[in-house]
Length: 352
Image (cartoon, rainbow, N blue to C red; front, side, top):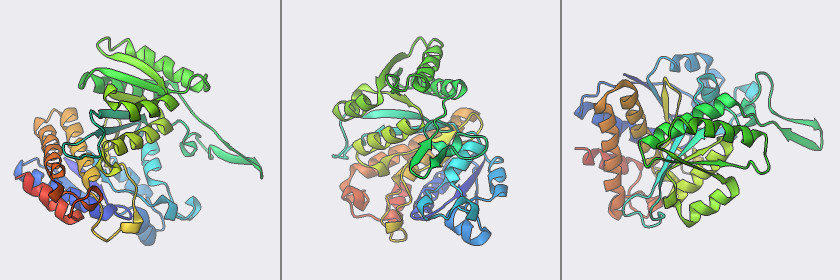
């Protein structure tokens, strides 16, 4: 299988390098047969090619089984007409990567993590409140007059149905509970359509318990008792916010893996940003990137029926648990002494 590696910006090259070191180690020891190919995106691509994401690279990505995508420094990009393309958004739109799985689990020994937290936020990625992907032509955010700004939200029955199905399929592999997050008491049409589709899909999964919670109440419930939640289903912006909250409650946003996928391909992408303030200083925690790569392996294993790939992903996850459980083998953000490279080397050693 072929994996495309795109290091991107800020701490991206460092955490991707650490993650790929782990991947190469387990690829060799377990004879997974993975082939890796690198290319440039982000500021490196802008300098070389005049754009943060080349059209030919977008097309090329379709030919890979999976992609490892580093974080991007979008705020440092020029306007779109000067080459500053929103990379993640364009991949999501053009490749129809609609399902964003973001697990949050309190790791053994990580004292700041909320006890009992073990959930996955299943977030829709191609529509919702993110106005840059809501129109066929033009932009969904605009100013009709100099003192009025407006933004369009898009919610489709198809988009809601397929992300709901992804959530219920995941719940069947976990504790069989889905919580649908919404604001239908105010956004009666958009979130009403969302709930209608969720409830329709739920009929195909009678073994899974469904409840729904208002978005504002959900933030309070997550802080009070996250153990009550299993799979949290949400539209784009709600899911983005809730997954960051859940990950921080697990101990750190740096502990949060993430994938974005459709039925045919999957991207591993760290949940956090590019942190340009610590770039190149060997300070970044690469756990999120490593967990995302582990999730990619598990996704590939399930899709292609390769138990060895799924096991490799689980082995990486377990090695990270072991490393994080010991204060002496944590990164500085978690009170440990290790830098990015040393932490990666520790995880490799734990994999044998």
